[in-house]
Amino acid sequence: MKFRELVHGLIALSARHQQVRAGHARVIGLTPSNYTVLVAAAHLGRRHGQMLIRDIAEHLQVTPTHVSVETNALSKLGLLRKEKSKEDSRVSAITITDAGWESLARLASIQSRVNDQQFADISADEFDQLHRLIKLLVHNSDMAIQLQRYIVAMEGPESETSPTGNRTVERN
Image (cartoon, rainbow, N blue to C red; front, top):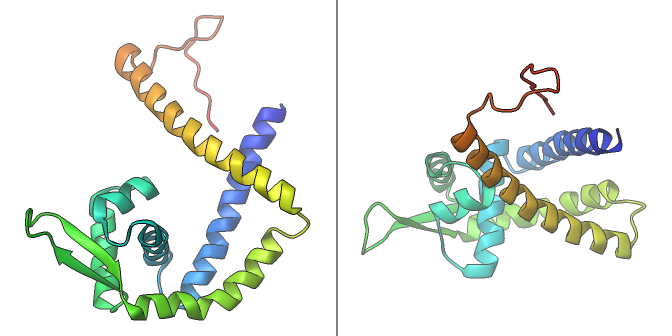
């Protein structure tokens, strides 16, 4: 029972966090999807400078095609730059432009206050613990996705049955 409550709590938190992010996107005139890609590019760019569409796609767990569509839109808005690789014209390197960084900076004041509210009443130690747990859950979720794909590939989607012999389908 506690596990199900946790899972549904995570779903509820995720939905609310997506609403917060959609609000951030509106502040700087972007769609939620534009905003997600821009923020992912900023996050990855701070670590690695230029990044590739596949890097952003992998980070967000979306298709490279989706990221390409969003980066094209952000490029038209002047928020990032796409440069074709000299070695492989199918590959584009992404960098955030000054205008992109300025958009994120304009949002920072509002974002900071909203984030402070979202994480209010959580101590620094609890925040650190939550950060560690989230990183662990992301890693474990990646492993669970791989396991799920393996099981379905090896046994098929209808392999699990209940003690009565009926196929079970559990939905989260």
